Image 1 (cartoon, rainbow, N blue to C red):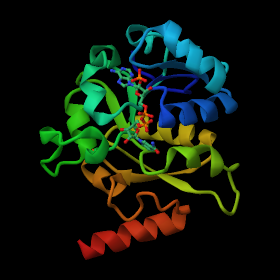
Image 2: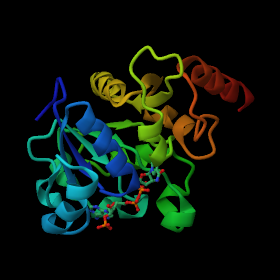
Image 3: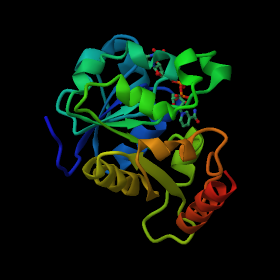
Length: 219
Ligand SMILES: NC(=O)c1ccc[n+]([C@@H]2O[C@H](COP(=O)([O-])OP(=O)(O)OC[C@H]3O[C@@H](n4cnc5c(N)ncnc54)[C@H](OP(=O)(O)O)[C@@H]3O)[C@@H](O)[C@H]2O)c1
């Protein structure tokens, strides 16, 4: 299945801090949301009923059913446990970070390659991976969301090799309440990672672009 848009239904692997914040913003923007934890749908439903009312709790094998976009919001140490074959042809949004204090040392992410390139290589070849949302704290996803045109609107960088997927995800980001700033392909996605100039900085569009340019000049 190839999504050409518009995106109406999203699935989120992970009903933790970031998955819940994304789900809540997406629900507020009118999206249909499916969500899962590592457990059975009944257990996820207990969380969803309180924290993401309106979201449909499912088990992982059914998370992608009927979705236009799937978000990976699990700890990076767990992503290979997901039913990745179900992501064939899907737009997949990677909000994950390699965070050794939480993940432990993961040798495959110690190579210096952007983590999203490694994730992409583990997905079905026709999955369309886009990295974004990873560089903002989970609690800020709801706190900092603003309507389009607000002077204090924060930007989220978007990186991906499939320009059609980047455009659709950028619209999704806009609907969540943030300016989307396309920064290039996954090879450029290190600019979103922990330790980068924009990670945790919560910048507006122009300041983000300037920070990325300045960091590029220094490296
Ligand atoms: N926290 C932040 O501020 C933030 C911001 C941006 C990006 N991120 C990134 O987002 C990712 C998730 O972080 P988080 O803070 O949201 O983590 P978290 O609060 O620990 O939540 C992780 C979620 O993933 C689920 N999960 C784990 N293994 C799974 C599996 N095999 N199948 C399905 N679901 C599974 C967990 O379900 P169970 O409860 O069943 O284990 C839980 O719902 C990380 O890569 C992190 O770096 C975090």
